[in-house]
Length: 117
Image (cartoon, rainbow, N blue to C red; front, top):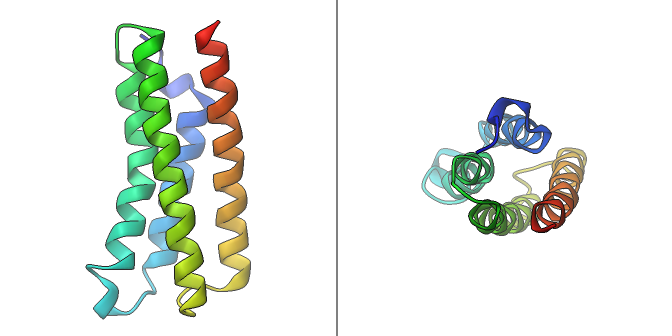
C-alpha cells in the first residue's frame, strides 16, 4: 500500500478535477446531463482510480488502476475538445486543461514503469 497524500500524481489529479469542475460550471443547463456530467465524472475518476490502486495489495493491482485512470484522462481530453468545438470552453482554458492532462498521462506512464520494476 502507498501513502496516498504523498503521491504527486494523485495530488495533480485532484487539482485537475477541481479545475474541470470550475470550467464546467459555466456550461449551459441543458448540458447538465451531457458534457458537464461526463467531463466531471471522467475528471473525478482519475484521482479516484489512483486512490483505489494505491490501497491495493500489490504493484500489479496498482498498475491496473493506473491504467483505468489513464483511460479516464483520455475520455476527459476528448470531452474538453468537444466542449471547445461547441464554444462551451475557451481555447485558452482548453489548452491549459489539456496540458495538465498530458502531464498526468506522462506521470502515469512513468509511475507504471517504476511499479513494474
